[in-house]
Image (cartoon, rainbow over all chains, first blue to last red; front, side, top):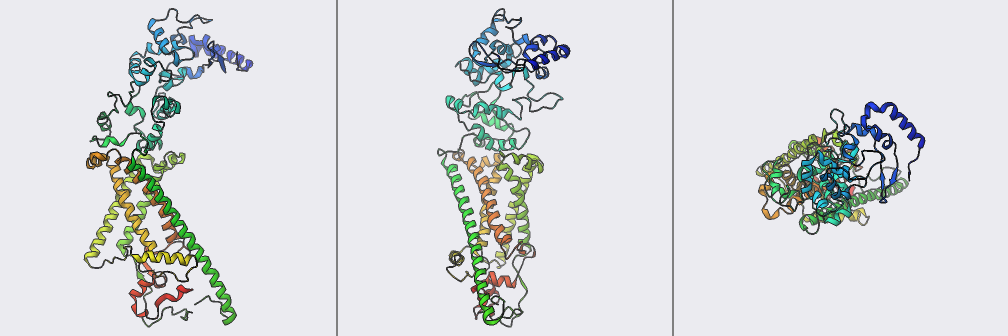
Length: 331
Length: 254
């Protein structure tokens, strides 16, 4: 069952934990003795391959490092772990069932986020991501961990206070575009929900995206315009980016934005359905190609002519030497 | 074929000046502004066009980060536009003084010259075309900049002041105008850079007879030998008394 190897290293790790851990890990010690050492993947009863490893150090450094394991893992308050859903608040059990598709190991622990983050949870439920899970019962709407990363290593979006590490969180300014791209660039997801696979590419090609990738600060990233927990489809009239709601949105940075201005950012690829820019671009590519080729040919031909000139002059020079004794070419 | 002595390269009794003025001070200043702003725009804009390339990030840091580089780009762009206005004003003044010659305007002879040059290059004809004050290479260079400033400058202004530009656009253009402006600015600038690197650098720097560069842009003067060699018709126009014998054609036939 265990694919992970290295019994010796596990024993050493346990020894290490027993030695130093009490002050660091507090009541979580008894869990981390095993889960800190459980490396590799394990097969669940349902036949899923999962990892049960918790990096104790990273957990301690995360925003939830002070919480006890059982604060979220409500099912697992004793060892061997007892049967799920016994004596757990009803709401969490219910949420846990609804999001079962989002967690391979412990949906209850994922549902436990709502214990503290209830308001955000309500926002997520109403969002296009949340509706996909709770209404459409799909498993690929983004939920807490899809964006915030490993449950045991969640750090604040703005980085660890005083500890640098601005890029530590997947939802940090520096990483949010790539994080959204993990699903929104995926072909399977895009085809399923009918959105373009080139959204992120088109953002990267926009002036916002270009400046962002060159290291610019305070630029609009995905969440700036589309929202985060309460994100809505651009076809939803309540969305910040729906139709003329954009006038207000863009106006936050671009004073005096009007409805003609906000048409600038669409993230749509330029295709034949937009013939003017499409053929303008093709035309410019052809023009550039012709200019480069034409100039290069002209230059090469001129070089060729110079070589011919030298060869001819030399021949005439030889003739001149033979007839007049002068080696000056021509004049 | 040629019988001139090396110390008296020109026939006739006229005392020739050693050189003729080709660009006056205004034109030289315009050119210096043009080349400075062009390079600044090239250096800062290139990284923006290829922002997805890893090295662009480091390159932009040299220019003080994206914000500073953007500011350099805008200031240089507006300076270049003002330089263009300076040039137009200069042309207008010359026109009203009656000194403006329209010999930069492309004419049918340029097409003829081009094909004659090709024939010469291919060894099909021993004669090089005889150019006037500006040959078709130089006209191409000049009008490319003219066209480039118009296209890139106008789209650039719209990108710097997008909310103002939006007031000017008719409502029916909004579905494509922004993409078009972006393409005009970015791709046309790419074309301009490539063109300068190939055409201008070859013709004014790398050609064996001007290497490392033609100094006209600093001195404004072209030596009389070069003028006769490369712009024989202009030479004959300036010094008509040497024309009857066929002027400076002797060397061309080598």
